[in-house]
Picture 1 (cartoon, chains in turn orange, yellow):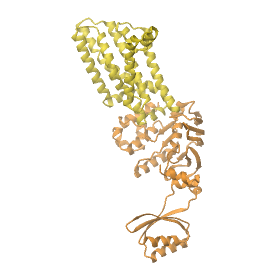
Picture 2 (cartoon, helix red, strand yellow):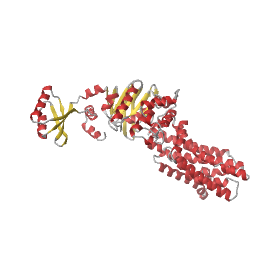
Picture 3 (tube, helix red, strand yellow):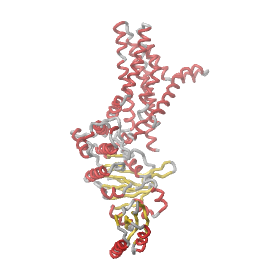
Picture 4 (cartoon, helix red, strand yellow):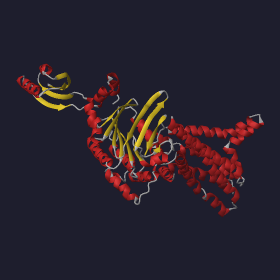
Length: 320
Length: 234
């Protein structure tokens, strides 16, 4: 459906994208993962024809973007990082404007727009000025705009940024539904978001291709040791000592403390026997375990293992 | 193009801008009409338009300053430029919207010649000439303003740059009279859109002048389109 080959974008001497090649199958939900400044938005802006590539081609359903921009743009619904909303317009009027702008020709315009409004749940604000809406609603109005005209391809640039957890779940569900009969490219720098909705993930960093796989395989490939967070109460030094002396536990760090409870984070390859021992060791020393949870595998970990360049990643972390 | 025109035209009246512009425009032309035509008891609209023309330089940039700069600032240009609409269509649609607001204002001023026609002898050809010339001249000013607006994200910078360009074109006439070289002086006069207006005030619809104005409008809209094309490739 979408073929991207040898895409390069240079700003002066700096490469924003360097020889990026990948393709997206019809009906696939592709996750586009990378830290800020990796070139995700640049790639999306080139696919949608907002900016031109320095070299390389983008073909959507057989049409090349620089040769047939109008044909390509007709097929794509785009939600940029900042939703392109006219703040002085009422939601309904805005969607009507997008409908006209995209030269959509549906039998019943009102019904079409109403379906979209119901899908992204903005019915209660459809008569309000966009400028008066909250960030979450604006994001949804932007998504609604991208959906006008039932485009075959949806390109969503960080669609859940700035939303509260409830809204994130709602938007994810909408994207899942949409992905059933559409081709979707979704960018994010949050791994869990990508795993929740995408069939396949492409990771880029500094404008270059890093890896491509299904979310499950990617986590396996990364092969990080499991990280666990323990919250214990009592003697900090004693607890640390017990952890360090347990077989299979490594890299123990105390990440935070409040009162006399401490959060320890460590990597583990404990066998069941070790776990039992750890439990009784804590019990003997009267150190209750208040909480225990698996630490989520972060994008930084993935980059660490995929790029194998620790310094580079730490530099990026400050941007995330 | 129609969608862009409609949205842009409506946005003048969704915000205060359209009303403020029309208020100032009508207040100004009303005062001019009272002073020039009623005060001096003349049926000719020529001196009326001579004064309104100069005033137009000061209020027309208000119509165009946000035309493209605001889109860039609010990132709504991403919607327009990723829609199946050519850049040229977008530029023309927006330009026509600003022209549309001016035409609405100008249409209301038609009451003045109507008043004259009822109470005196209205020089019809001359008045028609003045109106056609006025719209064309304002069209040029708006196209310059549109171009300036496409260059920057800031409305204020766009407005100031437009004022600069317009004041320069007004000065062309006086600069020309100081240039000793006859050829250069003629070229300067030829370049000044203000000088062309004289023909229209005589009631002559000079084909050459009409083409001149329309070409200038086309030129600046073409420049505006080029600004977008260049930015896309940057």
